[in-house]
Image (cartoon, rainbow over all chains, first blue to last red; front, top):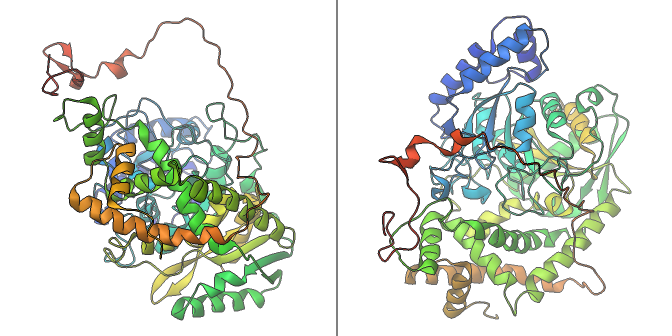
Length: 473
Length: 104
């Protein structure tokens, strides 16, 4: 079994036919992960083989689900009871959660085996997975380049064959961007599709658990199990959970795909040539109609995001005072000094930068000009996208303006780093689903195409990915 | 070009956020925030008169769970041997003149 290409369906068949056991399979993935030089993992699960043995008992009983015994990697901002969860931060270096996130718990109930916790940007804040307290994650196609962020470790785990599927989180593109950079599928669902209970909060109106996979079918089955309302998350929605994996087999109707004029204008050089080539392929493929659309205010999405998100970050990060849990420097006597010292030394530079930016945007005298204005423009962007979806079934664009950049290239230029998210943030702001899928190479490096759809259209997006991925130049 | 933030402004924001900044950190924060906030100025171009700020779609009221009296049975997760020293549970010192963990 080639670990780098095996899908959940293939692994499930192998387990059912006793070609291998879950223990053998899990051991192979653990061995591959231990040999990792890309820094994809922060912690491996020392109970993984025990979980796999339990899965083997369930398989032997004749009552497995399609996910029983299948290994899973989990981004280290998602809580796992008894398994260290650091958020890639010194602040939580020794934190062991007392509970498991609902999304992971549902997958564990379906029989999945947790391999370990993947590396990422600290507290999911970044576009490159360089801002980790445990070192940068390296791109498997070119280790001198970034894996993308913030869920770089999970993207690498799937791309490099350390796990067949992995969970990430996506607040402004943190699943889709590393998926694009690493050549795998990355799905961000509709806001409220998957419970955020147990997801270490970054920006609560934007965060969603996302999925990395090698096939649309794998993403579908994992999505199906995780989705659904959770009484522990008041923002999770009661919308019906379709049988995504069954719907993949339905014939795709003729699809109208909107291509915003503004998306092409943001590209240049080899990336523009690549995108034009991809559009030409779809124009020549029956069943797809490309429609030029206009999203005149989409250019403001990044500014809206980088006001709203740090504002929510500044509130969510206030809980980290080093007293009840988390890093404590232990040198100050006065309480307020303890707070400042613990936070200053426990948080890395990008986290501190976003806290400062958000605190400024919410502060007296600036709130109206920044946060309030951004919240109103967010409404306008959402309306613009809803209007576009009255004409088209999905919106197509590049996931990123460039392929993976060199490690260190953008670390000292925060705004340039933020511009990596220029195509992805709109989906989070509007709460709509979006998926990045591998669509060829630019200068030898993977590039992803992104599809956005109306709320609750994950089934259609996954159908499109399944249909589109074989379409190659 | 309007200046968005000064060293004093950064210091005030840092105090609100309970973040300590060295002199170098403060200077760097001024430069970085100025660049970022200059980019954000474009939001003022958008006419938002009559537009309501975005609110999350229909957040359901959080359910109240039943709260029956029952014994706590997960002592094991709290009584990790690593948390004990000489048979006593170690916590972080808060009220201490020196601020160390074993302060009295």
